[in-house]
Length: 579
Image 1 (cartoon, rainbow, N blue to C red):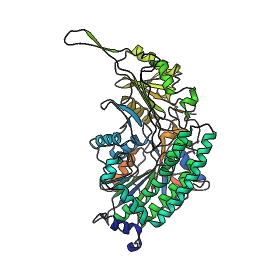
Image 2 (cartoon, rainbow, N blue to C red):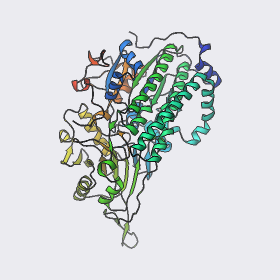
Image 3 (cartoon, rainbow, N blue to C red):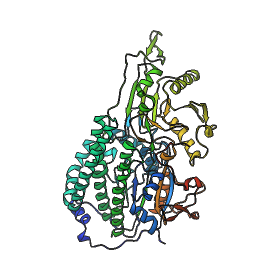
Image 4 (cartoon, one colour):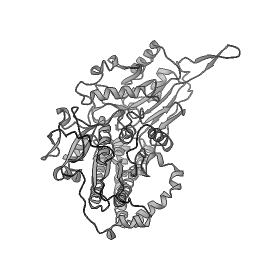
C-alpha cells in the first residue's frame, strides 16, 4: 500500500474552511497535490495505561475505530526525561534530548526563574533549540505548543503568546472572524462552554467540600473551560483550514486532559470526560484531511507523556516545602513553587525570613587593592514544580558538606529522593534506603522490570548534569510509595514513574516506524519517521518487525509491533508508580 493517505474530491465552494481562507486572505501551498502532508495530533499527558482504559470504557470511539477498521497500530512511546512537554517536544521538534531540566527551573545566565508556559522563557529556549537541530515544522503550522518547531504560523503557542505578539498579528480580530463565520462551530462552542462551565462549577463545589482552597478552585473554572473547550475548538477549526490550504505539516497539542489530570488526577472522571471531546475533535480533523484537494494527508496521534496519581507534599508531610527547606538550610533562602495551571499561580517566596540565616557558608573573596577578605552572601534558591525541585547553591561544597545536606533533605525534609552530580560519568542518589551511584546501582534505585530502564537512567543523569539543573535535584518519588508533588496537584509528571514515562503513538500501518529490539519508540524515533514520511530524508530501507497482538478494547485484538511482554499488558491506573 502506498504510504500516502488517500483523499477524495470535495466541493470546495461548500467548505467553510475555503471561505475562511479567502476571507482571512490566507495563502495556499502551490504545487503540493502530489506531495504527502501530515497532521500530528498530540494528546497532552495521556499515558498508554489511561489510553487503554479510555478505549475500554468507550471514551475514545473514533480512535477505537481507527484501530479496528483503518489499520492503525498502537505503539509504546517512552517520553524521555524529564517526562514533561517541554523536554519531549524539544526532542521531537528539534532532535535535542533533555533540553530543559524540568518544567520550571532557575536560569543561571538570566538570574531568573523560567516557567515554560511563560512567553519569554519559552521563546528564549526555542531560539536556543533552533541552533541545535533542524526544526520539524518548517512551512507548517503549530497550535497550543510550547515551541514553534520552525512553523511558519503559530497559534496559542507559549513562546508567541506575549501580548505584543498577539497585537502585532491582529490575533483577537482574526479569532473573532473565525468564530463569527463558523456559525455551526460557534453554536457548538457555546453549548459546550455552557455545559463545561456547569460541570466545572459542580467540580469546584466538590473540591471545596473536600477541603480544597477556595481561590484555587474558583480560578480553575475559567482555566478548565478555556483550555478544555475554547482552545481545543479553535485549534480544530484552524487545523481544518490549514489542511484545506495544503500546509505540509500541521501540529496540534490538545491539552484538556492534562489540565484536568493535574487538578483531579489522571484517572478521574473529569479527566476522562475531556477525552470524549478530544476524540470528536480528532475525528473532524481526520475527515477534513481525507477530503483535502491540496495533498494526501496522513494523521498521526500520540501523547507526549503520561501522568502519575500523586499526593501533595503538604498532605504527605504536614508542612510546606518552604518550611521543610527552612529546617535544612535555615531561613535565608528563596523558594519558588509553581503549579501547572495554565493561568499560573504566584510563586511562594521566602526571603530572609526570621528563622535565621542560611547554614550555607558565605562566599569569601579578597579585595584586589587591600587583600582583605570580602564576604558575599549567596543564599540558596529553590525552584519546584510538580514532582521535581532544584536547589541552587552559589558556591562549591566539599563531598562531606554535600552529603550532610543531602541526608538532611532526606531525613528532616522528608524528600523521597535527592540526586547530585558526582563526577563527569556518575550521579549520586540518596534515598531513605541509603546512597547509590548511577549508573552502577541503577537496579537498586529503580525496579529492574522498568521497561525503559536503560534510557531512563541515562536521561535522568543528563537532567542532573544540565547547565540549569540545581546542585541538588529533588524528586518526589521513591520505589515504595505514592509519588508526591511539591505543588498542590492530584496528578503530576516529570519524574521516572511507569505511568508518566509511558506515552503512546497511534499510527497508520504505512507509517515508516521501526521499533527495533528495545520494543518501544522515543521522540527521536517519531521524529525520524515524520522526516521520512514527508520525504525530507531518504528511507532507510529497514523492514518493520513482525506484528503481534495486543488487547485494545474489551473484545477487539489489533496488531501492534513486537515489544516486550511488560509493555503489552494493560497498565494499572491511579496507583503507585512502583510495584
